[in-house]
Amino acid sequence: MAHYELHCRECGKTWGNQPRSICDDCFSPLEVSYDYEALRPVATRERISSRAPNMWRYAELLPLPQDHRPNLPVGFTPLFAAPHLGRHFGATNLFVKNDSVCLPTLSFKDRVVAVALAQARSFGFDTVACSSTGNLANAVAAQAARNGFTAWIFVPADLEPAKILGTQVFGAKLVRIAGNYDHVNRLCSQIADEHRWGFVNVNLRPYYAEGSKTVGFEIAEQLGWSLPDNVVVPMAGGSLITKIKKAFDELIRFGLVEPKPVKIFGAQATGCSPISTAVKLGNTDIEPQKPSTLARSLAIGNPADGHYAIKTIRQSGGWAEDVSDDIVVESIQLLAETEGVFTETAGGVTVGCARKLYQQDRILPDDTTVLCITGNGLKTTDVLAGQYELEEPIRPRLADFEAFLQRGTSLPQTISETVEV
Amino acid sequence: MPITVQIPTPLRRLTGGTGQVTCSAENLGELFSALDQQFPDLKPHLRDEGGEIRRFLNIYVNEEDIRFLGGNSYAFQDGDEVLLVPSIAGGVV
Image 1 (cartoon, each protein chain N blue to C red):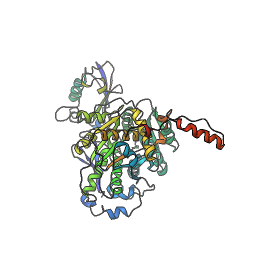
Image 2 (image 1 turned 120 degrees about the vertical axis):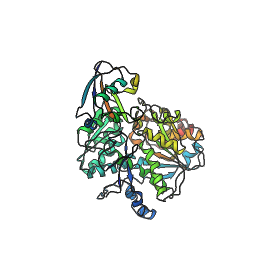
Image 3 (image 1 turned 45 degrees about the vertical axis):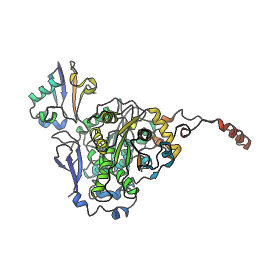
Image 4 (image 1 turned 180 degrees about the horizontal axis):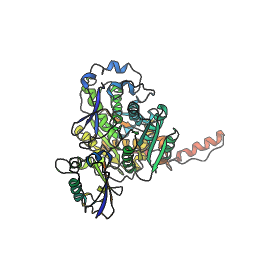
């Protein structure tokens, strides 16, 4: 007997374990629920800490088939203090959770795919698939290659070149759709009805989404088995933010951390901000938007988990913010210059929104605050085009360098010099 | 106003296997009334207890989310193709 099964988030009907994402009775999303009593004896700090530093150390708290044998060290990315960035915010207790170095494809999506493919195998799928804004495409393609699945990847045609290449290189079948992510996603729902494929974010979605909990587990463990005061989380479909909250709740339930209210803050780009708009207006449901932002990995105008993201934020006492594309780019540079972390546009969104939240006193300076950096800047270098000019090469002579140095005072200021503290 | 409605696979058990319906409806309200009448079993899956369209059901007209077209007030055009898609749904079990 598995220690988990699917249940409907709205009407409560249980569905056992199968590749299914919605309740046939009311169309509501299904979620994985656990037999927490059965898990209590195995969910201990000692047991978890004794295992290798990757997401599989939390195996019992994930919906994994009993015979699952992980073959990739996904997760357990660094969490570190960010004092230099903190100074720019007037923050004294700021941390970065750095999933821009998650293995194998440098985004938090590696976590969700790892769980989804474990289930894809147990359900007998030969082919896995996804609709994606890029990071998921990379993650599915890579892990499908490693695990011997055929991969079909559906993306909006205008995706960043690095994310396209980073999918094709793994031998995945890439289908570019003339439309935005919401169009891609709708098409995938229809394809999933016709082909017996394991769509990680369609029919495997309840399992897939649970992989995001490991971000929350790790934050708590890396803070010495304690919860932060605040987390700031980028939002696209809105799933990650709800699962970080679920992770914290489970840790409290198992007595692995002291109970504590954590404020959950959501971050979006203004050009695609259905969730932050709803939070600001006090709405319980989102109004879909047509995305127009550089932050393509967050460009989901009709977020599947929007309703639950709003609920999570509101119940936690948190808030949601959004920032312009200019601020996204500036924030990418600021994080790089202050903490040596090169994040993609979604990370720029998170950093930019965090700055706003400090300015608004929604996050207080001494609070323990964790910024979730979910993707790598090398995948979205195009947004930095034109930000840096190359100096003319100099001859390999000391005198030339000394002359260059003299001119150096006229070099442009860096972002961290210009952004006010 | 003849329009076509595509019924998603998971709901076809409630329409006697019918995957496509042609009907005359001026707007969303009329369309749902027509579907209610033709497929009484379908009704509780499309609307909640208060009669509102279910939160997780997306409705597209010619590939556009109907909410971008005015939602309930959108007047169907001759030949419109309507798609009912539960959000994040799909999958051959």
